[in-house]
Length: 103
Image 1 (cartoon, rainbow, N blue to C red):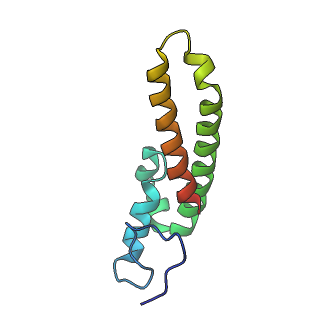
Image 2: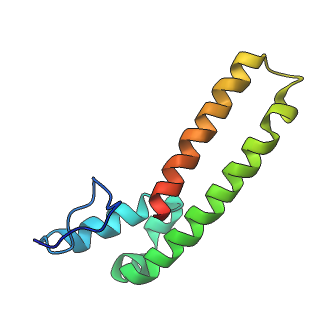
Image 3: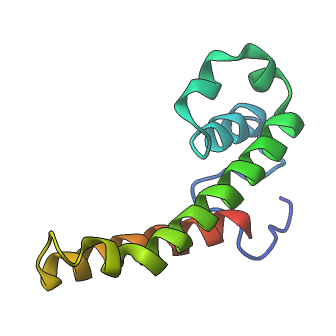
């Protein structure tokens, strides 16, 4: 068994497992826009898919951070403070998930 790097995703099989090639493609596709699933070339070339997943995750994380920074101000006139706090908690959680994906 291969020693897994720190931060290896719990739901992803180790690289030396027989099911790894299919598992990694599935895992990467879960981190990309759903439309990527319709492109067979991405299923055949996990290295290309991994680069797209990194770029997509970075952009999504950047977007989540920008949304977090402006959410309170943008939502203050239309939502009560407790709902805004819940929305911010969602953004914090998603930001942490995306940051973990990038590690």
